[in-house]
Image 1: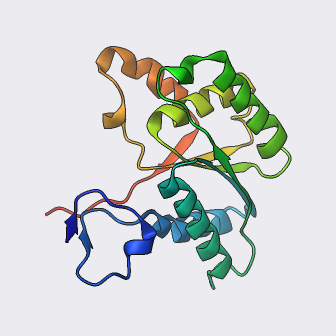
Image 2 (image 1 turned 45 degrees about the horizontal axis):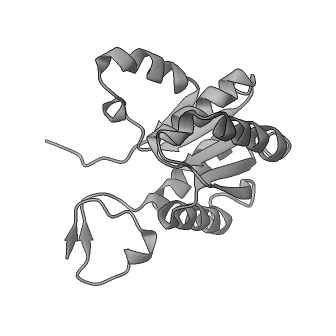
Length: 177
């Protein structure tokens, strides 16, 4: 079987299963190396409740803990699952207040590094709230596979890009010749 977009880490050891994209738990070594290089030790993971994102965060957490190059310096302090609403509901005050609660009560006291494992719409809203709460300076936000091609048409890209200010995106690609 060949999958064009499956990132589920549990399928990595299945015979006769091929994929065109990498499974997301490969990000663990990149995160660990980056954090060790800058002497950062604690990371909080914020993920939406879909199985793919929770599984990804749990897998990354396990791999970081088992990484022999890590020497136990980097650790995931918490995985925070969020019920991310649809695009229309993302604009409501309820979601904004949920984000503010998560950022101030769960992220702020535990780590200065935040890994966002959710879809682009939620990442934009989380980053907008972090900016409103002055939680960009002194914090580091990671996302996965966030590219400008995911954004809306050209007229909205400027405002959407400003929402992503402060986000570091890790992307795995296929080398081309």
